[in-house]
Image 1 (cartoon, rainbow, N blue to C red):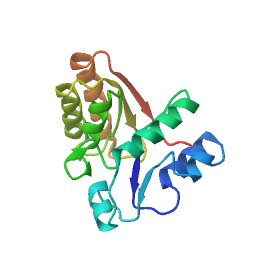
Image 2: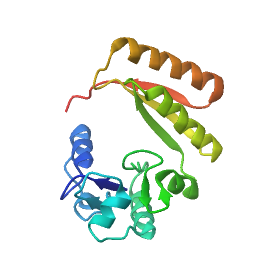
Image 3: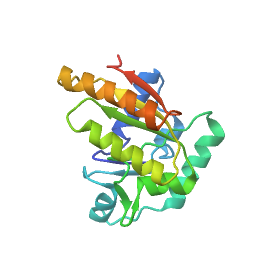
Image 4: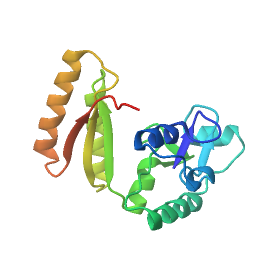
Length: 175
């Protein structure tokens, strides 16, 4: 969708292709997989402002539609979190809600993750956004006591308040 803090091809995309063990695609080179790339590492609305550019939602929608025609699954990765603005008064969460997309929420075991995750879940609930899965990232490793309790707490919270949301943990991926 949008990436900040890099030049050329999105850094995350390079990692994704390594994990998939495939070369960059034509869609990667022509910007379809990441229609907006900004050099300054900040929220997209500020990065666009610094570069004198305007983020056009239609361009993102067109890229998404083109990818959906070619692939069974399309992952739209926001920059910085659900409530980060990609335009002055529009957040990633607004975009997800407007298009009715389901959500995969990624969290971790670092201090503050319970709060961050619960706030994100509640924001989605308020907007009737379907949270398909919470992915618990075990890498990098944090304090094992905090990480273990965070994982346990989130599993129980989902079972109680989001019973249709799956919980899955994953560790370091070899590339």
